[in-house]
Image 1 (cartoon, rainbow, N blue to C red):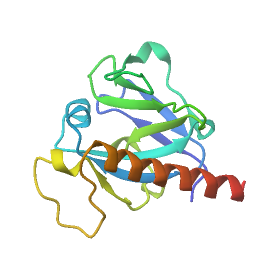
Image 2 (cartoon, helix red, strand yellow):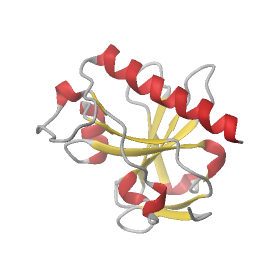
Image 3 (spheres, rainbow, N blue to C red):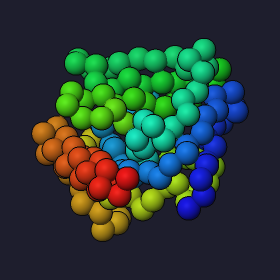
Image 4 (cartoon, rainbow, N blue to C red):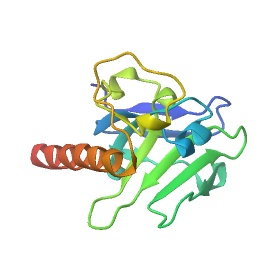
Length: 157
């Protein structure tokens, strides 16, 4: 895998770099992700915060959609594309969520591992990935995948 991948929104105004490997990739079908990504579902890739050189704050407009605000979602200030998200769950390291389409080097987008909030889907998806429905089941499945990825990456570091 390359040591660096650049990321950018569709207009090119919001840019940042990834300097380390991804933790995981997932598909989220929740209504907030649909709205944030202006798509039927979110195709997201997660990274350790230390592996992302964050974009300049003046290029991003952040918003939290739910309480407690553990997830800050950032849109490009120029084109409005979903650009970057910061997930900060107490007692876990902060992770950065990047829309997979923004990642220029596809070596930084691993195969997806699950669908969450599948009960909110716009269309059926024909693949063999686990499909989790409902808030609690989706959050638990996603949280378990993130925790396992963090523990796995920490053992390798």
